[in-house]
Length: 238
Length: 341
Image (tube, rainbow over all chains, first blue to last red; front, side):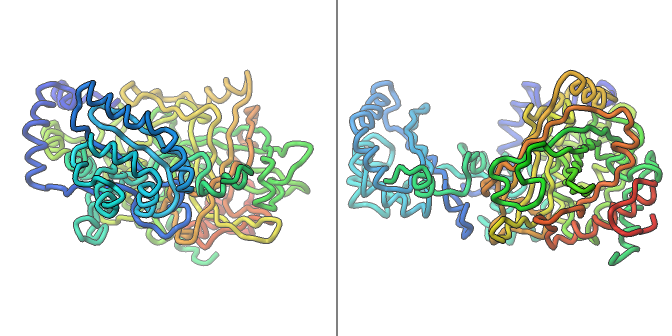
């Protein structure tokens, strides 16, 4: 709340909430900036790090677009998973680095949300080895999946496909989005520094390229510990 | 004191119109409270300092909450960093301090760069954007500078932003300070001791750590769209503690090799290991605020065996800056030898 700078000032302050200005922003202003400063789509998954707690409890947010988004098509996706619960649970136990994993049906996507330890590619490789047949069933139902069938014979292609469908993870601290964009564009971060006020525009333009993103790395109740350490401490073995 | 002129220059750069040399140059407005601290059962496994050892009787503490601005006049409802200084009263009339603020990151990595920042961010006449400038900002997908608060004539916003545009290290703090808002109560905010300290466990292992206080009541700000209330934070705390208690958890985040231990402009990722070190319970607002809060001279270097400062140069100069400020305003002398203020 600020002091009263007159009716014009108050009206201008309210512009972002006015329908006509939202319309103008959506169909003119944003497209103009997308044309002028296009942002490449940023890749999914966690960024490389050599630090221990960056390499445990990593997040995967895999969005697989359904071919048939009707209730029948969506039911088929549910059934493909529901019929393989034993295989999924046994497979993830055998992977051994998974804290949690679950499937969601959200709008037109079947999603696998999981928390795992270690390298992303090796995680995908391991779960293809252990629950690949579940994904074989799913691949018939998702866009671009046919080319990956059977998954066991297309492991590297499957890894690339998962990377392409895993959500971009926005940095934990907002300002670092500028640095991620710099690196994606082959620039040294902050050379020269960005104008602080440009951050909202950079976020809007990035959200144009990455419609769905993970907001930071999320909260962890016991950060820095691997699934193996937790299970060992709890005395429940493997 | 390594560089008395730099210390003096920093304090003078923080002095602003509307402040007073008889008060603190920043965090000028404040209120003291008293209470107790109880270490968690695991705290002793990570640090041998006295306040983290189990005791039959909880440790007494003195706490001072404050508004970050250096104005003598209270503007509780304005967006501002808040402070929480805690003195743990140890045995044999010794004490140790933990000084924290609602901003989780600092403005500059060295005393010299902080002096540059403090000079650049000295409050200047509010530069209200015209409606046309705001429209230009919207068309550039930018957020205009906020309008000044009613009665606000000067502010640091423009100078701080201009500085941050040229010095990337200041951007995290300036960005977060610009949206920090006003808490509904001093006990409804999280406070961060932004510098790194080194704690030693019973086996002699050192860990590089950062502390923060988390309110059990939860974090809650006022609605920034409502008119700001001028004065309410002291009364709120008095009322709360007249009828009950308020509590904070002390959390300790453990840094890893590769983290910046000596640069408080660099936040550690939020998924570093963290340990619950204890519980602070506030139970009273002493009537004699001069003796219990305003005359007290907190200092981040007032430490005890088992915990020591990192090599952070800003933390290092804080020892002398706090002492200089204390002497200048006639505070109860710092525990360090006599610098003239």
